[in-house]
Image (cartoon, rainbow, N blue to C red):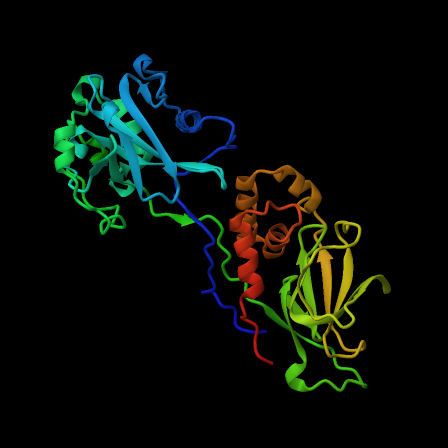
Length: 399
C-alpha cells in the first residue's frame, strides 16, 4: 500500500458559508428569488419579518420595506466584483435607508447576501464612481452578510437610521478609479455607529468549499502470482481508486461497501475485469486492444445486503491468468443503501447532488465516487471539473 496523501485537496467551486439554497426557477424574477431567500432565513431563525413593497417603486421592483425599514435590493452574479446602483433611487425624495446586495448563482441554486450599505457607509466611500445615472461600487464594500440586515430590523428603531442622501454633484466629484482595490480584504475594520450598525456584526464568514475531494489517493493491489506468470516484479501492482480496500489477506483485497452498485475504478489500464459469485462467473468484460482506465459503473443487477462477490482485475499487457483479486462484501444491516433510490431522491437538484457527494466523499468514499460518476448526476461545471481532476491527476506510483 502507498502512504495516503492527506494533502490532496481539490476545490472545484467555493461558496460562502451562509449561502441560502433554493430551487431557483429561471422564469421567476430575480428579486422574487431574493425575497424568497430572505423569508427562508427568517423562518429558519424564527424571526418576525414583515415585507412590503414601496408603491412609488413598483416599476423598478427593487425597493421594499422590511419591518418598516426601506431597503433597496440589488443583485448580481456570484463572481461580480462591482455592482451598479440606480442614482435616481438613491438621490430621490424617498431614498432608502439601506442597500442590500444579494449574489445569485443560478447554476448551483443559491443566493448569498453579501451585506449592506447605509447612508454613513456610502458617504464615507472613496472608491465609488458614476456613469450613466449609475453609481458603481465594489461588491466587497458591502459588509455583514444577512446578519447585518436582520440586526437592524430587529433591534433598531426605524427613525434612528437616516435615509441615504447623495446628490449627483457629490457623486460626480468622487470618480476615483478603484480597480486596484476590488480584491482588498473584506474583513477590514468597520467604524462603529448607529448609522453603520453593520459594524456590530462580522462580515461574510470565511468561505468553504462546495465540493471538496480530499484524501482520495489510489491504492496499490498486487497481482496474484501464478506458475505461468511472466510479469516482472515492478509491474506486479494495480493502481485502484474504487472499491476501497480496508485490509489484505494473502494478497487478496478485502472491501466492504454500503450500497448495491459499486463503482470499479482503476487508474492502471485494464485488459479484463471478471466478477464471480459462489465460484461462478456472473460478469466478464474484455477490453481487447483498447487501453482503458477510469470509472466503470455497475453493469449487473443490484447486489443484495450481506452478499459476497469476487472482483478480478487483469491489467493491460498481462495474460488472462494474471489478475488482482478483491473480495467485496455488502453490509448486512438496515443501513444498506439502494443507489437508484438515492439518485432518484436527488432528482435534478444540483444543490442536493453536491451536498450528497460532499457528505459521502467524507464518510463513505466508494458511495461518494459512485455518485460523482453516476450517469444521472447533473452535468454542471462543479461535477465535471471534479471528474476531470480525478481522471487527469497522475498520482499513481510509478511501477
